[in-house]
Length: 306
Ligand code: MLT
Ligand code: MN
Ligand code: ZN
Image (cartoon, rainbow, N blue to C red; front, side):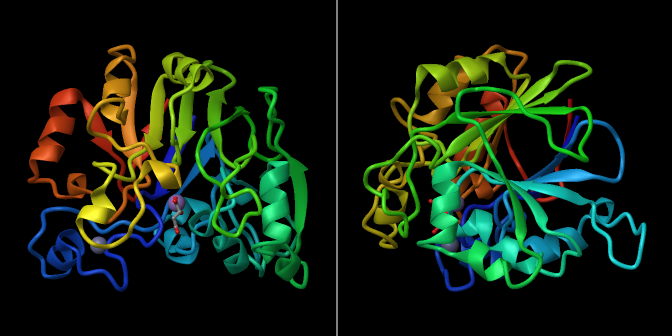
């Protein structure tokens, strides 16, 4: 199985267009040791071949496709290596890229849960808009842990796990999350049995998620904020990370404590990193702490082979 990181940043990307936080301003000025990153998305395939499952469709999808020749296998006048799209939630940074794929010559196979499908047809009705172009062929992601396979992406098995996180602001259940607003995905290579757990938005620990993380060979999980009050401390927002569905890395009960409990052999990678997060600065003490703990930070173009 091959997982390719298309975008490793959270919503807004890094640097964010209107942001002059220390990270964004220093990156623009060439004063920060670190990479720019586009918004959150990966693609995955089980067997080597021309076709991939796109997991989340970022507003940056067009530049991500340009940066990834494997996604353009050039088998015909109009072609794409994106065989299907799978969504972990209905947030803007994970879904608006669907509109950029409107030139598709066939309805896009789209895997999402029922609550996400509702949000994308009501509060944020991009599927209705897409219906005037290529449209989608919707496939329901089961929430009971049943595994499923994606047509055109052989050698890959997928299972979804409901996560405690947040529904998007335009969802009728923003403050009363329902199972399926956010899912973690267990991506398994059917031949080797090796697996990766992907959860770019993870707000709380739960037994089911802990078990999925322990069982995985690699975890690719929420790296949004270093501290819970990161945006508040910078004067950029009044909301804590936890209140918008993102467990911070540092502090008691944070992501680093959790990752430290996983088996030594588990590959641990943070993704969906917000532009305010000090771990984006490769010279920061926070990044040094990650290195000491054996935790990686995903970057655009990173390949994970399992
Ligand atoms: C999130 O992950 O909380 C959202 O994507 C934030 C956003 O992009 O507005
Ligand atoms: Mn996001
Ligand atoms: Zn910033």
